[in-house]
Length: 296
Image (cartoon, rainbow, N blue to C red; front, side, top):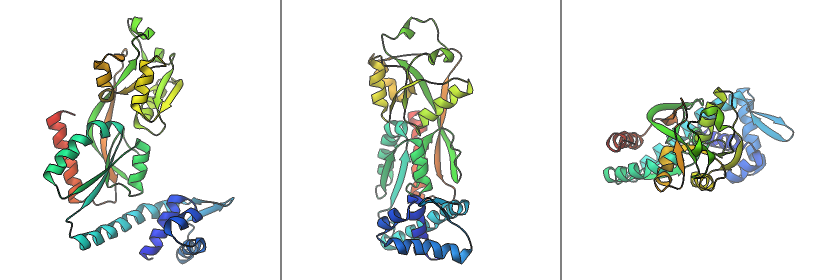
């Protein structure tokens, strides 16, 4: 099997559509279809199920894709190394919103001081998207909240993050002597979008107690949620680091929930078949050093 065949297969797998893949590859649609058919014929396997003019990857395609992206990546890294002798190496790092706000600015600044010849490209998104980008080999390495259980991803504990209940200054919660988890579901909740680590964490916590959150507001922006909370639209539970300034400025309030603490772990993640470069490992070590020095 040639590298060309692997590149075509990867794009078809990612797009889940022959026509779209052909456009991305700047190829004719019949040529892409023929390549996939030849691969299936040569190995006596089915890579895609064809149903109602749509294609769906088979389990064999899932297995091939996991290996193919790493083969292509290794080849591209080798070519890049031969072309520029690693003078201008680039690493692609991903992280969730909290990481992007409070970890990466400090870490990247320190990393550039120590390794000025290495270029760092940062992508900030929700946890689900970051994990997908790792699987698709769009990122070398990432940091996300919650314990990742997706196949083909390696994890390493980084630190523990605190979450806290937030509400407006005029909210009736102010008048309660105490409040427990069960009482919170009586109020409209303002939540991050589905796929975010914060949203997944909260839905899991409440589900464990057989409770369902009433979603009133959904946003990809934590600041939008804070603004909505401060205006009395509802309550939320958000990363402590992201609400500290608003709490200090008195825009919102917080309090402990009876017999409940919201703690979640943060992890380094990377593809299990990816050989982390020296630069990526150095970035990870700088993260650990900053954590100890700055008490992230």
